Amino acid sequence: MDALPTLLGLSGSLRAASHNTAVLHCLPALLAGRASLQVMTLNELPPYNADLDGDAMPAPVRTFKQAIAAADALVICSPEYNWGIPGVLKNALDWASRPGYASVLKGKPVLVMTASTGPFGGVRAQAHLRDVLASVLARMVVRQQVAIPAVDQKIRDGRLSDETTITLIRAALDDLLSELTRPR
Image (cartoon, rainbow, N blue to C red; front, side, top):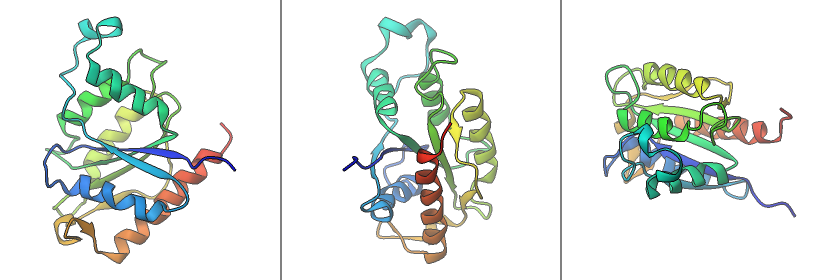
């Protein structure tokens, strides 16, 4: 029997009570029996510095890149800060994008989600994130956007409680898992 696909969840928020991290922590129940998901924080990554690329790479960066390489796909859930992705997420993607055109992100399937307390669910950040991922040659799942507006009203006790949102995310995860079996 083949092993289940492994997914790596990345939150664009460092906040301890992050809504985006809470969304990611809800995914294993939606993936039960079909894939595993590990959520990795970005707290330890230093600011990107090209002088530290290669052999001088800081240990947290090496661990981060190894986790991406080992995963079959990524699920990124990000808030929207000033119409874009948070600097911490951009920084992480900058580290992961090296070496250019041959990074651990090249060809990696990625499901993009955004969640915001605002009425648009972070769609502007999602556009920004998609541009960044396209530039590093990641393989984004092409589908209806998963943008979760008013996320603070849809999470109870650290869990998603909104059935409409859960249904949308479940369909997105189905599309991601289908992408893993699609020939390239």
